[in-house]
Image (cartoon, helix red, strand yellow):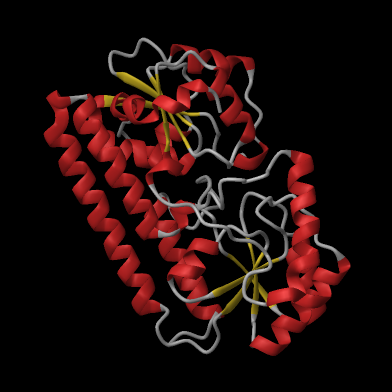
Length: 328
């Protein structure tokens, strides 16, 4: 980013005070400019950051999301109006590596407090090659070349940490501690909100562990590689049609490889998501005689989402995975 990131530990303490509560639907669709709202104003990069901000911040903060409901976060380009929002806000909460436009805008912004959620947990490398060795190397090179060309380099690792309830809880705890230090007058509320959120995430983790314990296959096929952390957490193998960038078109060789994997590993379902085209997933499913279903990366909540917030959509994901993996 820029020199400001060297001061993240100090900055983060103040930044988290910017996070807020209120209803997520209102927050996510909030088009009012951040600024003089009478509370601490935070600009969140996209839904998982806004959700985290609201649950921990409570009533003490006002949150504005840069990514609107129904918008694919990877494709976000910051507008002049949003640049102005950043300049007027007290803090920014984002996840470096997911949205290059956001990373650049926040890096150039004079905003006093910046918090990168990726610094609150360890990022790992995930990609389409996971689980099947050398067969994936060529496809991964193609994927990486595409990502480099379009700016989605993800050099810091896979950014989809919110899809692992354990990692998401680690981020929540880090933000909660920073809130308490930044705004001691409301420390008790931040502590309570954080504890409640972490407890809810621990319960979600347990639901996934027990729900997926008895299954007939470990392999699932997705439209893009968003579920690496979730797969690793619960002993699954994600096979993605595209890479970390959902716009990547798979090669013919990759499609043939997925057809073979589906046959060899007893795959029944090709998953697609709500915010990107399902054309490739449905074509692959049709060619292999498989079913299709939604596995939502929870990058945004819309009328088409299977739930009204993070927890509801994640539980819908669990139901879909249980069916696809033959869990009993």
